[in-house]
Length: 434
Ligand code: KE4
Image 1: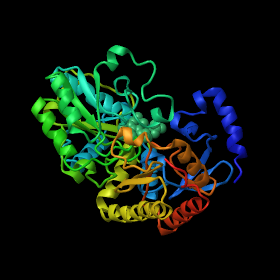
Image 2 (image 1 turned 90 degrees about the vertical axis):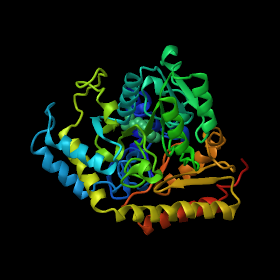
Image 3 (image 1 turned 45 degrees about the horizontal axis):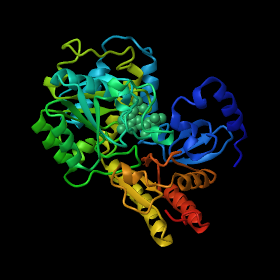
Image 4 (image 1 turned 135 degrees about the horizontal axis):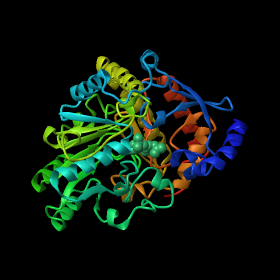
């Protein structure tokens, strides 16, 4: 594969943008090579500026659950375009979206649209503080909830591809209000509640962690969080930016039957356009301006084009529930197939997956939390990433991310991916101790 044009573009990009990108993980620094520049996408495929074609397992980090360039979504956007781009005024589409979200996720008694997952989680935490009158929050090491100051503490995703899980520029006073517990450890949450009795406004969690790689909740973990928060008077916030409409139409809370007080969404609900949302208990959401004293606003919140795209995608998922089992069948073939290869080679690797998201960790041990995820050999992951990319398989350019399978991935793409991973194994790529 040639990457000449991508190389030229990257050389230019670094002149104008930090690291040549508009989001850190896209710079491929965690895998030690220059990024490919994508020209277009269609179905399960990406096409770069050198004409290379890739089977895509990033799917824009989750939104493309129907595959890229889905005609239903595209037609909805084209139809909306005729009415104008943005009005900064109330529209019927926002009611349609709110009703769709609530029909899928009954805990969303009231919802507010925003423009990203970051805005959704940042706003949900502000509402929780306003509602409880408390300052502290609990997050989990390795979970990522976007880049608002208080959440860039022991965070996952792109922070793990960089130097540290904590960001510079976050004031100590803000970070001091963020307590960090261990994912899958109820004891660590109980201990923090004990030491900060009636001071914690909320616990925010990715119900299935996907930003330290995919780490599912162990049996009883989410139920235990629910009980601990109710007892302590803290709000339970599910960050479903990845899991929302991914792990079924009802998201993780529908799958695990645990009802949070607030939930955050993004990605799939915008179908690739900038959309986020937060919502939940009516008594909590009535704190939000202009109804209540918690201020939150946005020029492009509920943007008509973004609403049209999101409504089209969510309505399609609602009307075709069989899609989830079809996507998850292909995902099971992929992740099960990777597990088979790892077992056959006796490789120091482990595979985690839930529904249509999963990760191949380059560590022998079980990955059940942040410390065990950090045991992964990121150099061996980088070698795997490059081997696969050079043969037309596009995966997350960092160990601590997820693979996303879409409705556009068929047996042909899964087989090609497994054959290529098998070739990597045959070439000794999975060998080497961890
Ligand atoms: P955005 O602000 O990037 O829309 O959403 C932040 C966010 C919130 N919550 C969860 C669970 C998330 O996974 C994210 C963002 N996910 C990353 C991928 N791990 C986005 C990719 C990127 O940062 O470029």
